[in-house]
Image 1 (cartoon, rainbow, N blue to C red):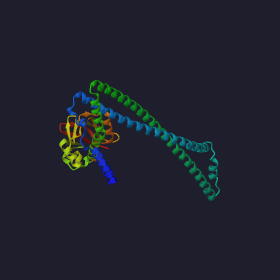
Image 2: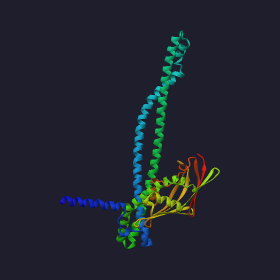
Image 3: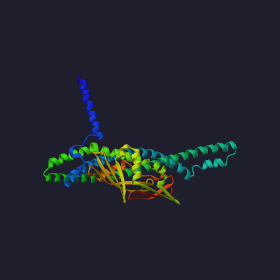
Image 4: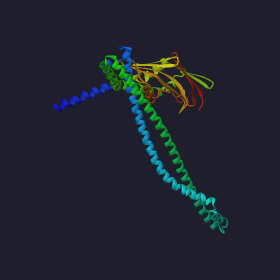
Length: 366
């Protein structure tokens, strides 16, 4: 009986954790959308979330720094081994070159020219062929080892440059979070309601880390997967394309995009996208979690021609999240559009957002 009770207790605990992760439990009182708090409190909660998110970015950069340092150490070790290998190849290659430039092969040529019979000529020719092939292999091995070590040093230099960049970014983010935390501490102390504010911030931060971030990532994942299928949908809706000569214009309304997205994933049924001049707005809500996004598109040609989406503003339950969160989501989830998935030899020339419409101008070209 005791074992059964213990087992039941564990099952209940696991179910509770699963529901919490899925965001189906109601949020704590202070973690609800921040529409019902005053502006000063909202700003403090916003700064509290920013501290959490910048800390998360610091953790990511620290991991990147460790990985880069490990790669530098491996590259240096590999280069040391290659230095030994290339030293031997360099000596062999030097002997080959000296033998040619100092006339040490003249005797073979004389033997070839002075052959008295066909058998002598063939034997001499075979000997020369073996020597020439051996020399060529020696030079090729040296060339291969030289290219390897050159590539290794270029990689090492790139890694060291990347490490310096990462170190600078890490330092900047640490300074930023320290300054923000100091601002926050001073504001809480001066509020006269320090305990209440701290509790509100702790609950909001916990809700964001355990539910909010999970929900936002789930929706971004669904959006990214849907956008990958957009070219196929456009092919099935030729009315969205207008061609004139070598130029094609794609016009997509926000109503069409919403209809497409909702057909792809039930998570997107409560997401609404609207196009306004120079801006895309996205609103999503499941009752406890409300997300608002503002962004814009640009045409990029590297590493390939694409219409890339940039997040200008990300708001969770009325609280704006910092640039580090926006950049992290952009890195992980690709919400862009790739014209060559639509038509092979087409490139995007420009993209614009008007009231209710996304307009992409395309041209033929590799």
